[in-house]
Length: 285
Image (cartoon, rainbow, N blue to C red):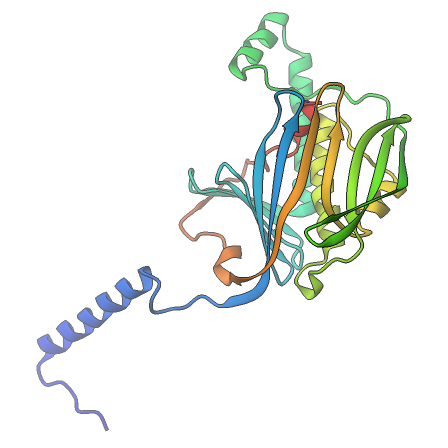
């Protein structure tokens, strides 16, 4: 059996020294190793052709039904499809916001409606002052007439990242609006319900885009296309520019559990909303 310490001061020194050593090792990532999952890493690049417009890069880390969607400005989304939650994390502000995905989408719609009402009550001078403060950023506008969306499966195919992708055209009132390159095989297996992720992601995109007066493609044909395979490339066609979004990397990777964990020292912002990740793409067209 262990021999008790007879010198209490010496015992305290040893205990405190052990605590300091353990804390140092913990903070330097030595003592407690974060569990690592076999998952995926996908990189997505957006660029504008034909004129000024959005340019960005996203990195998605995927494992066990969860996704960390890292944006070029350092902010990121944490999707947990098993729990139906979405959080936006801002490391620069050491804060986060979010909750249930459906509640987040509803909050975005309500927020943009309130902004629309406030802008409608402004005088011309107040609107100009708002435009000056926001440097001409797009503002919410009243919803217009719902477009007619149609989807056409073309005969064109292309090999992207070693996967054969079929090209689909989406037309708005008969005019070409989008092209999508869809690969039939979705590689993620149990790591991700890709169809559920696309539905959740596009519902958030729709909330922003509709509020800004640029409703995205919708309807049964579009919904079926969004879950029919892996989207490797998309082109949004405008009058003068094209916004191209494509997957540039898709690889197996080890993903630490900490990737999907909210930082414990960050503050929850109750009155915050996910940023308009897709709105700038629509506004550029």
